[in-house]
Length: 106
Image (cartoon, rainbow, N blue to C red; front, side):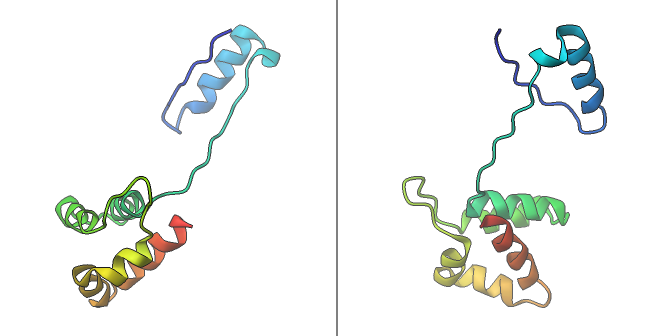
């Protein structure tokens, strides 16, 4: 039987799973999770979105992080090598945002 990659809102996801289990049988339905690590740019975007930072500001910050899929740069390395990221982190209270992002990146 083919798989169905389904993304549903968390609010009613349980109802969809229950329906599929009733329709096809509990022994025919499986829930599979994949996990991955977040790279520096992605984690900055996610943290910025959660903290409701302006999109433009988050976009400017993420563009300061070098992008190299073959050898991803960590957020710590990006901050160490980019003065504009360092300056942002030094502003009052903003370094905590990088701390959150670095914990999620690991």
